[in-house]
Image 1 (cartoon, rainbow, N blue to C red):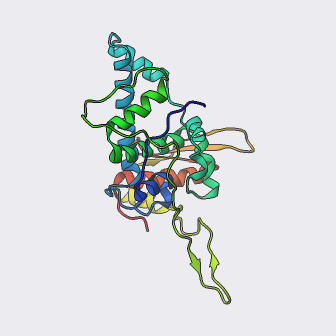
Image 2 (cartoon, rainbow, N blue to C red):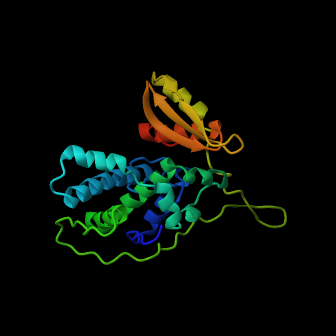
Length: 259
């Protein structure tokens, strides 16, 4: 992709860490009410993105009917994986090495951009997001402006640096040894999740599907409570995706801090 407009800026370091860290590494993963919780940013970003798309097409052609706007939105989905590579964001995401492949899926790439949009919206407001969405979706069309009465500087051409969390060290007999970046990640929560769900009288199911070649598959798993999807996970194997789906469902249900 060439000619892409620069991403709207994020300068707050807490926001950057929330956006560029996989949810399992988020220091606030167990606090769904935290202002910078990844799922809160993702929710805000997805709603902001939908509104910006609708406003873009509404202003592009004032004679377009509501049904035509909906068709335009549904038939022109964003290519989040392509955007992730075009902006050079994929290599900067802080995540366990075995999970990086999931960002080659539209689901996880979309979650990243929704978190980014949510964080940037909090920092820059709706007009900056509207400008980026409109310029990204349809080059050459005058950028719609929301009537905020505020002006925004042109976003920088590159993202500000993201500082990863400091490494953990364990004391050895002669020197400190750096631990594995995944050693403190609590992925194995299925037993805990299923037990709590049973105690709360929920029926848990995990619909799954596999895509990709047999030697390098990608698994998509949903965590459903009484038939309602509460979490989704993507991984290199079914167990990994199932764990991530259960973790997301745990957070969505507000069941407290994982132990």
